[in-house]
Length: 367
Ligand SMILES: *Cc1c(COP(=O)(O)O)cnc(C)c1O
Image (tube, rainbow, N blue to C red; front, side, top):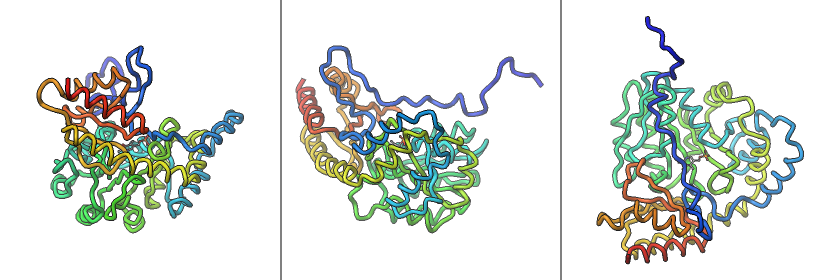
């Protein structure tokens, strides 16, 4: 057998399209930059979290608690969950990757949806497994299409509910229907990164389904409603046998000490969460109504962002709009990689940012 002349990554690694995060800079000379590209909280982090991290700075020489026990207890108390069924991570990205590494291997299949969150595909490939794409209908996950994609090799179904970048969601009856038709050997991963924002009676993040099954997990994040994207804190609520496997796979100190302190404080600050949700509930409908009045189609969103579709006239495309807005300090997100070459995703921002984008787009569309 011919040995390669240099080390080669395992199967799948070089198929990964490196994740391109939202832009955060505008051209020199732009007076004020409004970053609306990564669904960050326009109100920032809880003041309690900021204080907690300042205090931690004086004790940086100490390793963190490798089991993040206080953080798991704070999450458990806030959500009514047993902390033993929670694993914390360096952002929910990490836990999603660990689930892929734990349950997928060469030849296995992971099902993702047509416009689903892109990191799933990367993690499936990083595990040398095969991403299988299920079509969506009306920019929403389609349970029948997902079920039709299941084969003997399927190991995980990845479902962001609500989804990014569409902002659409599956009513929980649909999620239950999906779960009950899946083989018990298939893991259903419910990514509920935006759960706090959803104001719909037929939505559930998945807690009860996790509690009552052996093959469902729910991932959550501190990056969105808690305003702690830079701290990198995520968690999963999972059955005991999955917690056990993840604790073997994860790094021994995967959540750093500052993240633990910030997370505990943020979980305890219900007022900040409520204020953040209230801000979104006020401005999401406003942004949607204004964009619609401007003649742009907006995918119905229950998250803290909207997918805005531009025109096919060559002059008012998403690409041209993106340049126009960037020149004025409004940074939105291109979403071509998600199958939307002519749309931009906009985070619901501060009042100033929201009004600014709408007036800039109004000028743009007249140009
Ligand atoms: C933002 C987001 C996350 C959160 O990722 P973190 O690693 O926790 O910052 C997870 N899933 C979806 C769908 C997201 O949009």
